Length: 191
Image 1 (spheres, helix red, strand yellow):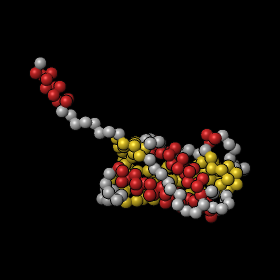
Image 2 (tube, rainbow, N blue to C red):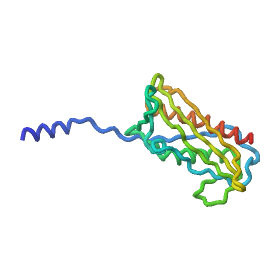
Image 3 (spheres, rainbow, N blue to C red):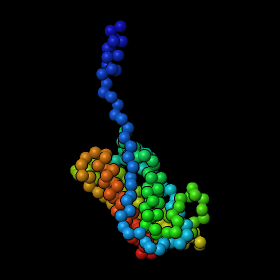
Image 4 (cartoon, one colour):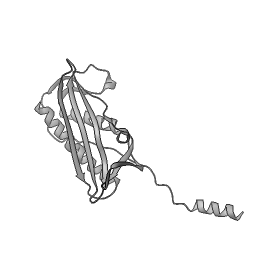
């Protein structure tokens, strides 16, 4: 009986499990929209691709002294898989810029004249002194008529966090995403 009482007392004195926290990345279009579309017709943005950990909902981090070992937070998640979240943010961003007649996703089942693909190479917090984040995206654009590759470029941005913690890392990644999408838009306008 004493053993059972001790066991129940030990179980009852455990600290509460932390609650799950959910985060999203958001790109804010802050430039002036084009007055006429650069790309005429349907401009399709496919779902991004990523490696296993980066594609998952748990937020990924690395320690600066061991940059090849990726780890996941247990209670910090993206609201959607990053492959969908970054694609959807890019669609919204490109629509606001008026870069194309129609910016669509494959789910709309329209025949595109242009197809953009993206690969998330890095989307991670780097724990060290100071804490920072890394975002690396590879973006390609092809014309469907003839399959000609029009554009292929990698964008990398590293941002120092303003404070420690996952929320600050998400803020830093949002800053990086805005810079990367702004640079991408400038490159598309220059084509």
